Amino acid sequence: MENGNGNGGKNERAVTLRVLVIFAVCFAILTIILNIDAVGNVFRKFVGILSPVFIGIMIAYILNPICKWLSGSFMKLYKKRGKVAPEKAETRSRGFAVLISMFLLLAVIIALLFLIIPEFVENLQKFINRAPDLLKQVYAWLEEKHQADDSVLSTISGNLLQFLQTLTDRINNWLAGDVTALINTVGNGVIGVVSFLFDILIAFIICAYALLEKKSFIAQSKKMIFAIFKPERANDILETARYGNDVFGKYIIGKLLTSTLVGVLTFLFMSLLNMPYSLLASVIVAVTNVIPFFGPFIGGIPTAFIILITDFKQGVIYIIFLLVLQQIEGNILEPMIMEDRTGVSKFWVTFALLLFGGMFGIMGMILSLPLFAVIYYVAKVYVERKLAARDLPVPSSEYADVGAIDPQTNELLPAPKQESHKPRLSIRKIFRALLGKKVTDSDQPGESKPEAPAERSPEAEQTGSEKERKPEKKEKKNR
Image (cartoon, rainbow, N blue to C red; front, side, top):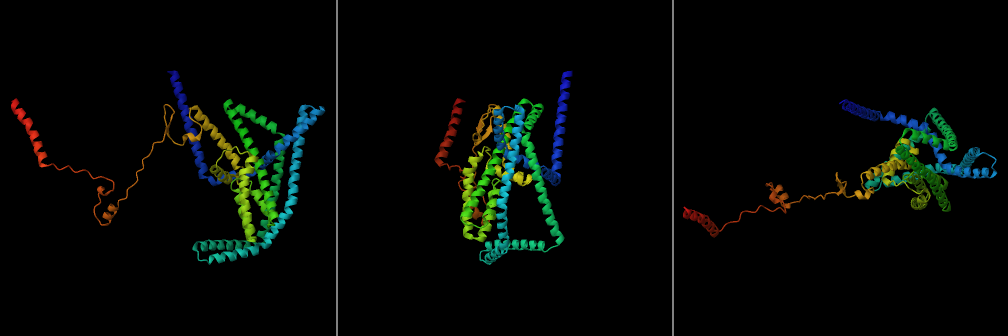
């Protein structure tokens, strides 16, 4: 009895604890929903503070292959000489590798800036100088279409004219406004640039620490995981971490390589055909191409519009080239360089872009695919293990025509065929309703009227009466 009471008390305490936990979770979710703006601001501020950390980790992912190769080369040299202890040789090799790889990255960035910035500024200045003439051409074209007979085209062109007029008025008011406001705007821009450069400096420092202490960080993380979780759960976490590391590394390096190739090919094509703003357009296309799915549209549409306004024929050729280039990138370059293993469909890619882009901004859009790929992998492993434990098939195609599952045998049952009941249209019924006559079910086509009883002939009635009289005669004889 005492054991029963003890077990009952434990069960009651467990149930009470679960109820309290559920209540606390529901209360926390409700509080977050009611204060979603404040929570979002805090979250964005937190992400903004840690943005140098994220940038530093991304740079470390980029430099890690170079560091591995350089560290291995230095270790071979130390082993040949044999004068330094293995631990010191490994530490020195890692330090030299990190120093050289970061120096190479800085040299490449500085060289690209010195090569690109002068021509980029020149192209931008040309565009700014030609902007008034281009705006006049756009105004003239829109006014011509606004006066056209087509009502739809006239409405669209009128709305665009109104938008351009409002935008131009705002820019003129801003330029002709108070000098103090203009100085404040310029000052805020300078502060933003200095803050960005400071974040980049912090990111490089974090990158150096991450590359130097990589083995130590990995060892500490594994020790913590094995101390907190059970062996099976710890192995699952490590397997997921390895998968995430593989996906992130290949995605970041592959996306940078493909975006660089796209930018170089765009610049070469535009330079060969003497298209305007070749460097400006190629840089925009290369930078926005880092964003998956929407990136080519974000960079391609404004650059195509600029070239179309300047030279219509070259603008059409540029659009055709971008379409062909995106097909080559999606079907040849990315599969060859990135070795896509995510298995995430286009629908989930769009979902991840909207979700992580809204939460983390541009950085979230860039990293949305590998982040969601890891989440998708964890959910896939969990579902497949549950199915295997219940002796159910794992491929999704096996569940296409399933309507139920047998609770006793775990057998998948097909979906029942639903009979289609199509309403029948009765012309007779419609006319009778229009004429004000009573509509009956017999007016429905295809519905048979109830059969009337067949009329009996006099001979049949006579034979029937004779049959009824015969038993009476037999009864009299028996009496």
